[in-house]
Amino acid sequence: QAQLVQSGAEVKTPGASVKVSCKASGYTFSNYGISWVRQAPGQGLEWIGRLNTYNGFTDNAQKFQGRVSMTADTPTSTAYMELGSLKSDDTAIYYCARRSRITGPTGYYYYYMDVWGKGTTVIVSS
Amino acid sequence: QSVLAQPPSVSGAPGQRVTISCSGNSSNIGNNPVNWYQQLPGKAPKLLIYFDGLLPSGVSDRFSGSKSGTSASLAISGLHSDDEGDYFCATWEDRLNVVLFGGGTKLTVL
Image 1 (tube, each protein chain N blue to C red):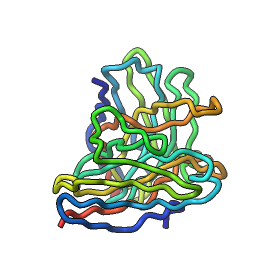
Image 2: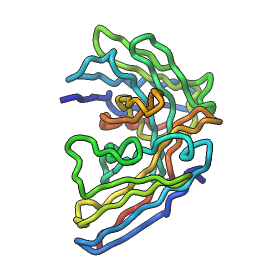
Image 3: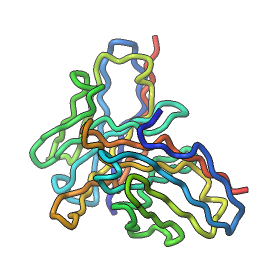
């Protein structure tokens, strides 16, 4: 069955960068995109961005512009999300999720996150 | 405060039916399908409903979704104690080009 396994917890100081990995198995990696979502302690879900694992195209929320990089290593079926210039309010659980799609009645594609990793805790503290 | 409005909490007794609403506008729910995610305590989110009302394989048919205009709803029938957790709606926001999540609704089974 499809599975996403994420890297372990990280503790970083303000201003540093963190790189989270997400290894896929049980499906053809390049046939599905990867989304990244985070959840601050006691808070809701926040979308960071999306990665097309076939062509490397990325798209992210404006608030992360210039700070986030999402990449894919197809031979190892692994996606990466690197977030730089860390601040204390970047402390959160970071999730990767497989991006599946359905074709709507007009032929347009619509996406949903159908397989999730267990999350990677990132703590930013001095 | 999320652009997609959900009630902070709902509750129901075992066996009862509850609904969770998700309200948006014409640039998100009004123009794009809604997905619902369940997050049990200490766990990662799980896809519950996609494309407004479709059930992924393996998800109980006690869960159902619907949409009308700029609002969507998740219904849970035959409540179980292990349904307790947080429920989030999500959809694409055309003006901001982002996936928007609702603020989440905490379900308590009395």
